[in-house]
Each structure stands twice: as C-alpha cells, then as structure tokens.
Length: 127
Ligand code: HEC
Image (cartoon, rainbow, N blue to C red):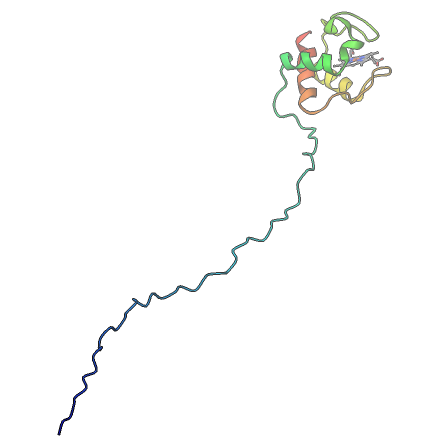
C-alpha cells in the first residue's frame, strides 16, 4: 500500500490583486446648455425727466453744446439773432417754457431732461 499522497503543492498563491473596483467612468457630459440670451442692445430709452435739479455750471456747457449761443451771443449776455437773455428778469417758468416750446423764431425742443434743467438754471442765473 503505497499510497503516495501526492501533495499537491502549490496551494496558496492566491493572488489577491486587491480587486480595485473600477469606478465607472462618469461620462455624463456636464455641458451646460448654451445660454442664448438675446443681447440687449437696445439703448436705454431717452428719459425726459431730469436726474436732479439743474445747475448753472452744467447749463453753461449745454448752452454752448445745444447751440443756444449761436443766437444768444456772449453766452446769453448779448443780443444776436435772438435777444439778450441776461438781466431781463425772466422767470424760471418763462425760460423753461420758451426753451421747450420755442418762440416765433426760436426753435423749441433743443434740449430735454437734465440738459433742460441745467440750461434753465444757467439762464436763470443770468437774471
Ligand atoms: C435759431 C436761433 C435761436 C436758438 C438756437 C435759440 N434761441 Fe432762444 N430765442 C431766439 C429768438 C429769436 C427769441 C425771441 C423769441 C422768438 O421770436 O422766437 C428767443 C428767446 C429766448 C428766450 C426768451 C427771452 C425773452 O426775453 O423772453 C429764452 C429764455 C431763450 N431764447 C433761451 C434759449 C436757450 C436756452 C436756447 C438753447 C437751448 C435757445 N434760446 C436757442 C432765438 C434762438
């Protein structure tokens, strides 16, 4: 009875490679949808309301820029095509109305909004 116990060597070698769980590739594309907000190119509507009380200093610039000075010479201190504006005791209301509506010869609506408030303050400062 020679039972050769064949010991099968080689047990072990149980290669444990750690079993690194491979994380599933997260292929969920996180591409945010293109925001196609329309470009707001519309300019702010021109406001006719003044931002604040008019100032004579700013109004002097407006007087030149709006070509008031083309008819009212010497920045309003001398007559030209239009009358002299200084020292005539013009009320603020009268000045404002004239600038808005114009006169028989003077064009109206040359300025509005803050420019109007400023130029009225300037002409008023000449009275
Ligand atoms: C084209 C020339 C002209 C321009 C530009 C002009 N004016 Fe006159 N303005 C006149 C004339 C002319 C009068 C006299 C009223 C009339 O006949 O129209 C006058 C009258 C006025 C009066 C009233 C004077 C009064 O004694 O009653 C004021 C105030 C005045 N202008 C301010 C302005 C201002 C401020 C501007 C600029 C925004 C301006 N004007 C631009 C020609 C002009």
